[in-house]
Length: 321
Image 1 (spheres, rainbow, N blue to C red):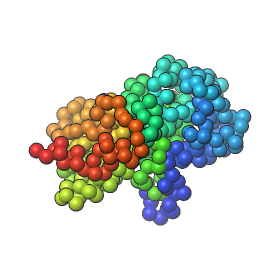
Image 2 (tube, rainbow, N blue to C red):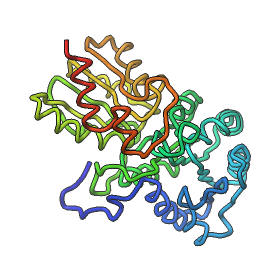
Image 3 (cartoon, rainbow, N blue to C red):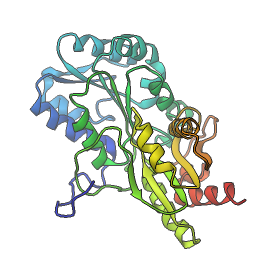
Image 4 (spheres, rainbow, N blue to C red):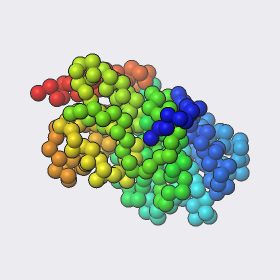
């Protein structure tokens, strides 16, 4: 996707939520119908600059995520394009009914941009770590679901989805993800990005785990394993045919995600493998259906084997036979 003639994006190295704060201002200048809403977390979700630039187009509903979604749904009926932002765990669970019934059932173009996805809010513990959000949102009919790898891909997705029909969910990190993309590009909704072709083994990652898995590929090469890496940032709508065409070239596939292994990226890929009758060995790597503990983010990455060393070791252990 990158053109070597282009200069490096100024977003490189930023957490995806900070990229969101910058791009939403850019989009606000381009389209006066864009409004932004938060549930008393404008600073944390990086909407402060938008609120300062467009005070008449920013709404703080208070600590009331259900109202955040309900008010956003109502604003679409007045021709607005609402960007509703809070922590991922709150948008997926506390406001699930309003997202499903007010927004999803009516197919309204609300953009739910949630930060602090996965275990990136490590010290806050299980109550603030979002490991169910992809599962919840991908089961709402008509909801498009995105999980960008880093700040540059976040910007590309935000620009690509601004005029998309229907509701959109974009999952962002709290911390700075490892850099995957250095140059800005035009995002193609639904198309998986084969970052490293590899040979027999393919690692399929999403979100903040793409950068971690990229480093795991290097560690595997030191062990004599030439692994490929596929970034799937459009979880839904999933390019089923295109994904199957890629997967059929490998004998071993492992998904990597900061999400419960149930009904996240791994489940979506498993459905493609099963329905396409692909003959390959497959494993889902992520949070294994448990409530996570609290701690510094980097320590949790290591504890749950979601850092490069853990991803490498998991692949080698699972497919040792």
